[in-house]
Amino acid sequence: MRHFLDIRDFNADTLSVILDQAASLKADRKAGSAVAKPLAGKSVAMIFEKPSTRTRVSFEVGITELGGTPLILSANDLQVGRGESVSDTAKVLSRYVDAIMIRCFKHDMLLTLAEYATVPVINALTEWSHPCQIMADLQTMIERHGPLAGQSVAWLGDGNNVATSWIEAAAVFGFKLNIACPDGYAPSSELLAWARAQGADITLTDDAMDAARDVQTVVTDVWISMGDDEGTRAEDFAPYQVNTDIMAVAAGDAIFMHCLPAIRGMEVTADVIDGPQSVVFDEAENRLHAQKAILAWCVGGN
Image 1: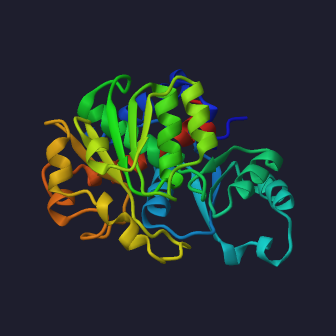
Image 2: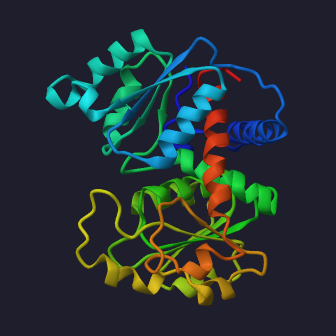
């Protein structure tokens, strides 16, 4: 059985197969070509403890295009919040559907669901990681700059769940990753130690300009995510805003990525996100293609 829980669970060869499939699915869709329906006759439960525009639409459209039937379940549709265990929920859903996609707060909930489910489970975001987003980001990098090995990326801002998946991807694919975070917001030291033990080239700094210098991709995320206490975050992250000064020190062909939603004037200025180096809408589109490839790999066995 094939779960898709975290980038670190896979080697580069397996993830490359999925990324190649994503590129093929994208090309076929744009050409209007007939495509295989590996999910024909299959149902996929989509559990949303946290709402999302891109995740819901991209997965629902993707499941449908692959021939499957999506079933949307909010927290109000499940008995987990009223005392039913996650393990029982996993066992019950496994009798009804062919796969489970979940977007939830606690990573432990995802892991428990995967432990007890007898169908594939896909991580569509937890507080710890966001592997589907990073697969779309990697697809975008390949489209713009070719093979991932040897590329360079700067992550500016919060060492959050998206940063976790970037760190894991750097360890798997061998691209250089510079992370610039204010004190108190760095990624897990255990995670960084793991990645470096895999041979990852990761630099952690508190200087955004140094992190962005000569890199091919600059990435950021919102400073205040759903469930975060705003506190002093706006002040703490102000020096890490992606603006034209940051992009000016990056490589000449550098791109800007953001998983969206974005707040212009906060983590990124309007002239960057709406400018010629921004690929945020290509990146958002690639959520559809990357996730179709993940679904085909997990459920269709392709």
